[in-house]
Length: 360
Image 1: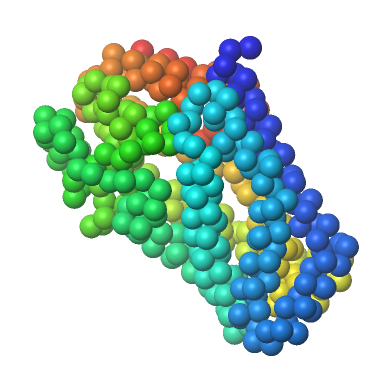
Image 2: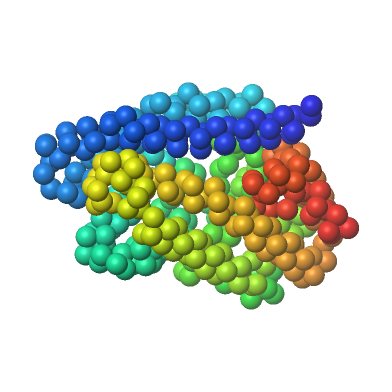
């Protein structure tokens, strides 16, 4: 089996295993009484509800991180090294995992505390209000990502190649996209994969090129990649995805609102406000993600095809587009022609061979 197929097969399997493993752990945590026991211990030491909820979350997150560490290490470090896709040393990788874990915990605490506050204050409309808050936080994070989140893991610097920078700025103007500047980040310190993006919202919006892409691809290839990214903005895809994700979040919380009483009763809990029931909420979100992800992927693939078409229409760089798709597939070990079921569940972009065929 070619490396790309073997790599993809391993990653698909591990994604399913990690999801199932998390769900089983949460389920067992509730069924065998560990969640009740932990909630009682935490509340005995910390009588105030909101700090107690944060400590309870910290304990179960730490517990999961320890149990899941071997699987996560294999998935995100060992496999990448095995297939020569990573340049990062273990110590640096571990520091990144700690940073990511702390960041995820802080965001989770904000969302969770808002959940408990709204749940206690608005008995029948909490699911609407908490959905709106979660959507708001996702937009704030998108705005802050270039300023706060990305610099935690990579170093920015302005693109030093004037001719390429001018070409990108000219392309942005042609496609009516406002950017503050063009930056490159030091991907090569950690990974040999290539990527480029158009990140941020409003005054934080910028172009980001991985050095693994900037140093190996022609200016034509980089232009057509960024034309694709600009096309998403030009066609309003970002707002469409925000509305789609918002609808799914709202639907998820509505389902929790309508079905939580019998579900909680089965586990022996009386209310969502009981912090011992927190793992049940997480199980709901996992199931919701599994159900809605294929539809989100399908819509995302349609938007990606539209962005490809506009990028080619604006630039006319069909040969460069085909070339860059081939190079990216090889460099990133992409699954060029996945099984339809794999595509259905995992692919939010059209497979490489489909994109090349559409451009040909």
